[in-house]
Image 1 (cartoon, rainbow, N blue to C red):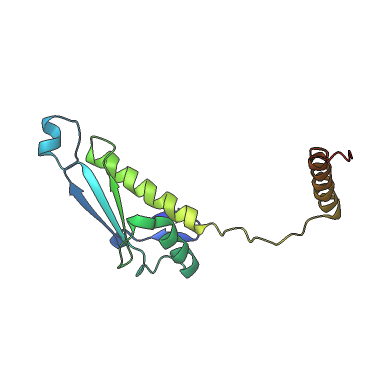
Image 2 (image 1 turned 135 degrees about the horizontal axis):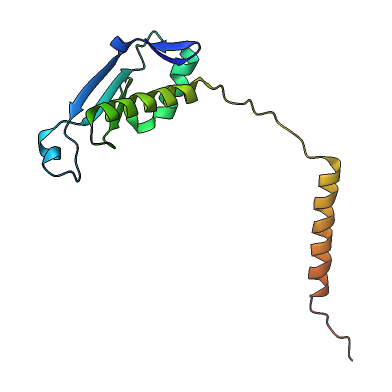
Length: 141
């Protein structure tokens, strides 16, 4: 069991890891050793996640989640397989922790009377400035 938060723990059998060859610099090591990790976690069928956390996790995952509800995290930052495994697990745990936080409920507020008066006073001041710039016809006959 991998403990994410005090109330969420994921079984190791729910996570599948595939090791692939990483791209980029690294010489022959890149061509010979599969150090990059592709971590797969089935969010849709996971019994470890509460429903509200599952929905928020799907929203947070964005392009990293497939149509089947499988979250894919690729880690290839480090040169060793073990460090990339730890990095992928840490990123999964952080994503689940973020999904566990309930969003703050937005409450509608109304503008105060003072702010309404300030807004109107500024409009009146601007109008007075514009009135002074008007072209005034001279009444010569």
